[in-house]
Length: 212
Image (tube, helix red, strand yellow):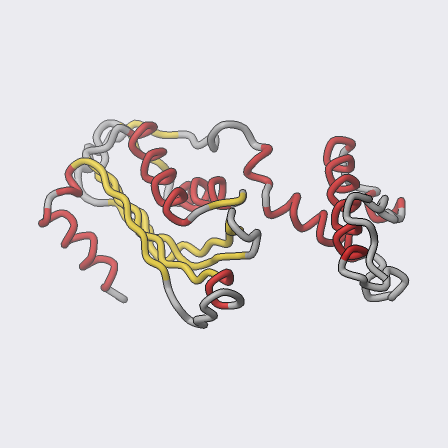
């Protein structure tokens, strides 16, 4: 029998399950688990089923992990370095995998990002592309907003000659529900500075197509 939807069922959290979790994170997990347990009860599921016994806790811990970008501050902390070599050509990292959660339905969307910039005085380490992408992906997100946030970060923190981001992703809210179109890929792009020039964009696309 389903439960009154206004009632939040307190989670059953075994003490050992959160033994290595900090106090603030523990409170988040326990609160989220209570809401998840209420959803399960409202759906009429048998919470005594061994397979559901700790589902509320597992979902809560997953949400805290998937949304950890929300708790890290206003923007990622990425160190930049002087461009001592005077490098003035394109720097590109492509096929960077990511996972995020659709802000509309809280189901995953995932894919790859391709990020490039042309430096002036400052550069960043190549591994930091992934760090920036991860920060903005780990929250309820829209692909369009994610694309803009990454290119804006590069623009504001590096002051490059230009920057460009292309994201290709599959959305489970499209594949599992609604129009139900498995395999559909959404592509978004954002560009700044010299990437508005056709020749520079074509260089980006040539590098993107190059598999060597």
